[in-house]
Length: 427
Image (cartoon, rainbow, N blue to C red):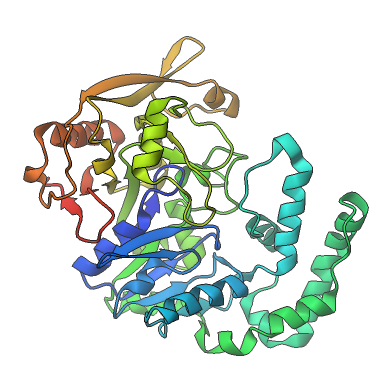
């Protein structure tokens, strides 16, 4: 039985939750796992007409019978975790099977404070973070002054670690940012308050997942953020603080690369991104406004309006290459039903030269101009289609054209937000 990775192939918000939900409801899925990021992620799932949004939790929390796992590569805000859990419990969702890695790092309130203060200090050079402390928590992890979930069960160790973490942070807050110092006792008290509720959820998730794979169970690894936000392979520095590419799954979950069977890249039929950074196909005209309006392009976690542009096959090929994609899942095809012609970026023009692969430098990518090919639209509502043959001929041709230039086959197509609004693409 397989280990399946589902990840974003653009700048996030591609509909990974829908792809995860589809996999978990068409085939038995035993575990759904988050391996990176924090509560800056956002997945929207529509079940029986009800909309659910997950942020820190895997979207598989809505799949009966599946165990949800927050693995070691995630940074966990206990406050955000329990707020999200309580919201689902109030709606009748069973969350009893959630497991949290003892090695996952903790986001404390001071991480969010540092995040927000730093962004304001940067002014026009802001990265566009969510201000939720994800970057500072990962920085503490790399600087080896981070607090892990397991530390919440030993007050002495917890106090020592917070004291070490705040030693430098408080100098920064008081002497550079002119803010008040954060008290160690207050942070210790804040985090200890979550310990007993967390304790039953916490385990060695690496061992759990490897044992599950040894037993022939199916494990679905659900990506947060996306390829172009990867700290190594994305549009640095306008990126997240972790590795949401396929290679990051192994590190973030404690499994070996030979365990993975399928890597599915979720990609929109157009392109969006939130926050700052280069975006070659971004639209500043009525088409961009129309895509934003029809696609409901508002960030699930941030509430920020997403920047919109046409499909970028250069980005798709790059995502296919760095992730080793076995297939794509194409979402929001239904949004394009109002255009007579649909542009697709097939290459870039940089300093007068045609470039068909991702530019090597940030400067080149900033100056990249899209080279478009145009495809006939279908000018109809396809949200009721349930098979590929039911799609209009021009919609089928658009999907096949994207498949031919994107580096991997397209396995499925989303034609609406609902669980049932999905079309499987024949080989």
